Amino acid sequence: MEDYNSKNDASAIEHCRDKSSQGFSTAWMFTVTQFESLLERYNTTAYSIVWEFAPWMNTEYDLEQLLAFGRLYSDMPESAASGFYTAVERVETNIEWMKRNEASIRQWLSDMTDKIGLH
Image (cartoon, rainbow, N blue to C red):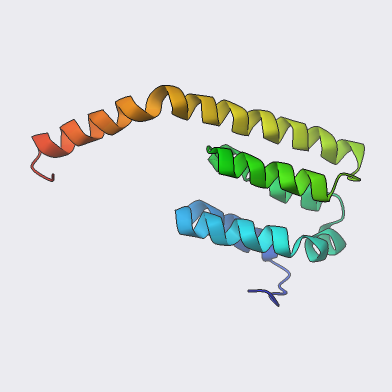
């Protein structure tokens, strides 16, 4: 995917990102490693492609990845920086939600799979 060069790369990224956790990881790595190309093609709109990952990011690792991107592109335009801070807030909120709810959701899923005989 390193040399991937399509006029529909934003759509391909979105499609991969939404399909599965592996698709998400692949799309994220592609977006980060190919960001300069995306920036050339989409100008400052390329930053929005990165921020659109935030709703699916819910771990400390995800947050660190987003923050590392922000450090790498700390000279981003003000409009992009606003989106960056919004994305960071979203990921932090997602992390807190996971901390509060993950155990009870896992328990509920376990109970349901036991109940229907899938466990």
